[in-house]
Amino acid sequence: MRWAALVPLFLLANCDDVSMTQQKRYDTEAPARLWQNGAAARPLPANVVAQGDPARAQQARTPPPMSEALLKRGQERYDIYCSPCHGLSGKGDGIVPQRGFPKPPSYLEPRLLAAPAQEIYDAITKGYGAMFSYASRVAPRDRWAIVGYVRALQLSQHASLSQAPEAREKLP
Image (cartoon, rainbow, N blue to C red; front, side):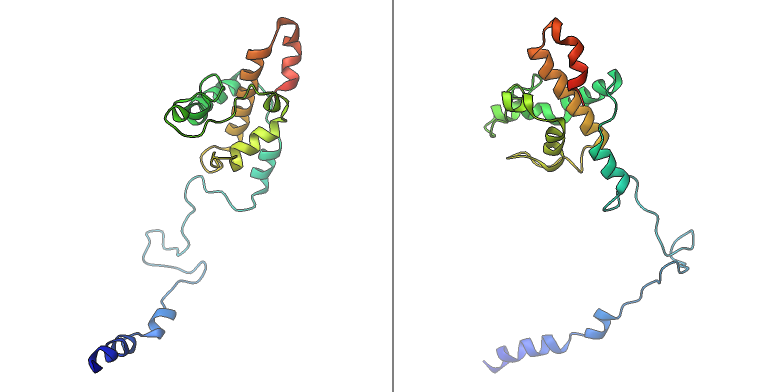
């Protein structure tokens, strides 16, 4: 019985606090023989984004000029990231809700027809309801391309020939 009480004491006595808190490290910009280039500082991985990056924040606030190429890119990105839930038509009838997941709203609802482009962009960025954030998966310019394509889907369902000249104003 006494042995059982002594086991934790033996285990704790074996801890060496000094080696846990005082580990070898390199100072900033110090030389290091460990790496081929001789520098301790490692290069950043590809596509890394600094927290608080002003250029990326500006991209999020400013939609690019709409063009046919941007709409095609938006359709491609929409088909990859959005259509599994929202469906190819934007009515919320994708394969995922058909398998029992909550149905997303249709882009043809009056609320989403009247929604500003920034609201759709923010939903892609931050998520909405059961939808998770796509900020880490879809670049800001591609998010705007998707928004443009969603607007094109909306217009295609409700447009008449007399409204065609106004369609350009509704796109971001």
